[in-house]
Length: 132
Image 1 (cartoon, rainbow, N blue to C red):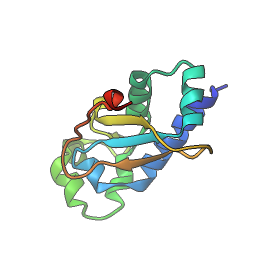
Image 2: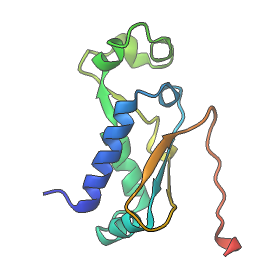
Image 3: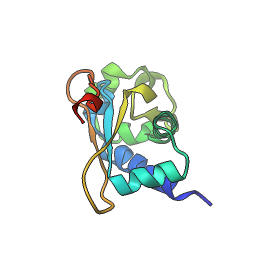
């Protein structure tokens, strides 16, 4: 049986796959914002940020046929070599690389976490530990 935090990540991965975001196919990453309660669950289940990123990178994929069923998807066709050469069952990655996932903890009480696709560029982060 999957541990509780893995089930949270499975839900996030399903959401990423379901959105069919062109921003994702253009090579941008995603931000995962975990509420403090869910972050505590991750710690309890011994999930590091690196492990979360790797898991989501592997899990957030969908068959190429799903993209081809959208019609003439020029972004996928032009930017993803797999679009031209892959079989219909090829699992396309929705996140370019595990390192393109930013995991943050934000919010207050309540088990509400979210994700959003990156903008048109690469993410730059800065630690705010010194501001505390």
